Length: 405
Image 1: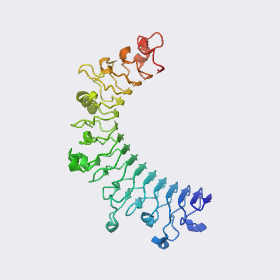
Image 2 (image 1 turned 135 degrees about the vertical axis):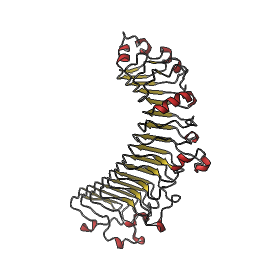
Image 3 (image 1 turned 30 degrees about the vertical axis):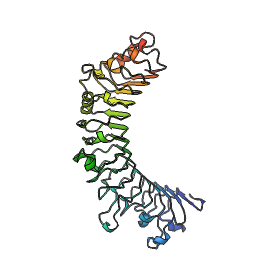
Image 4 (image 1 turned 180 degrees about the vertical axis):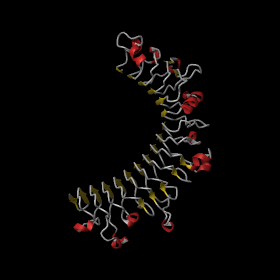
């Protein structure tokens, strides 16, 4: 189906036989918003590439290409499109790289998904004279997912300094994000999931704890989440100096991943740890109570077989009074929850407990007075004790408005 909503919009969808735009005398020139979907035979967007001179470059602002299986390249002059700010590519297995020299100068948002043969975003190895400058690139948001062939983001190793949002998912061959380079100084959001061979995020994380030496003079990172990266075993040494960091999530990475010597940023508002026994043990010793701004705490206790109480009773462990949400999961030998550790949690609104088969008791009722929601699942002993009206723990939770067992 070919549809021109107006002179600014160019849309093609479901044209099963279209091999090139020239077959129907089509051109992207003169349109601002281009969407091409479900054209399995389409090979190229250009009519005659050599005629696409700089003075004829289209005023495209948005380009969306989806399910064009034979498309093997984007326009060679794409890097010079002066107005394009958004590109989205999905399910184009013929693409090997996004750009051969650099990003379009005004590009701010790039989303690429399920391009299974894509090996890199920018290949600058043979275009040194046109090499991208990370200082002039305007890209702010980059999301890439399901790239089993992706080796690197840029063959040079770095990427745009203006990048603020980076999400990477299901890249099975990606071993390093910023090869021999630093984290983009303006990055605020970093989310990495299911990159099983990833070992390093940025080289400077491993080399120094000195922000001035590392180049991170104004660390802007607010969210750092990494999940299902079983080769990733080292958190940034200087993470304690990331004063803007609010959310930290480390889930199902290497079981040997360790707690940074200098600790975590004390102004974290959300912390989630799963399958990281060394981090949990060190956090207990370092002191959860040092996280004085923490509002959300999620702990999953895989590998913590020695833990029988939470918070741990023997060392007088206490939790930050600022907490509003706590989730405790998968502590195989957890027996009871220590009331002393729940003292002063007057802002706690929600408590979730999951997969703790030996857990028998909750904190005393006085520690749970502020709760508005309680969820207990896969904890057979505790579930029995919390039976409505007759369980030994029921009196502790009868006042809670919403109870899910």
